[in-house]
Amino acid sequence: MQIDFEKSADGLVPAIIQDAATGKVLMLGYMNREALDKTLADNKVTFYSRSKKRLWTKGEESGNFLLLQDLRVDCDSDTILIKANPVGPVCHTGADTCWNEVNTSNDFLARLESIITDRKNNPSDKSYTSQLFARGINKVAQKVGEEAVEVVIEAKDDNDELFLNESADLLYHYLVLLQAKGFTLADVIKVLKERHK
Image (cartoon, rainbow, N blue to C red):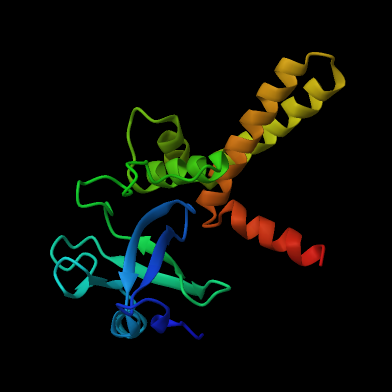
């Protein structure tokens, strides 16, 4: 990985920070060679602060660190793309991103999986999902079976709305079953990709 820090007079290159899980762009900072070395050594994103005139590890005061997952250099070797897992909000204003966006995936199934995981880990009596988990794996598996039968029945009829609703019910309950078994949709997708190399 060759980064051309000499392209700019101050020896700094832009570092674009992207959430490794959601894909959202979180912030932009600047790095010199020392900041890059510290980032790679500590696995916490460190910048060169132009206002403080020193190295600055994101989160050093707030605890809202950016944990390094991946680092890439652009085709001109003068910009860094860092994929990181944020610990808390990224912006100094308290927002998720410096563009005041909510840091959630545009992938609805990923968001739904996140909600299901939260209901599993933080049960609520008011949550149908939490109630399903509380009933145990057999009940969750039974619901998947029931919904699958309903999809088959609706597939034979001509009511598209009912078919789509039952399909949504099946997919939701399947995601719950995956969580109950300790897996995610990504695990299933990995198997499918391996089958279709």
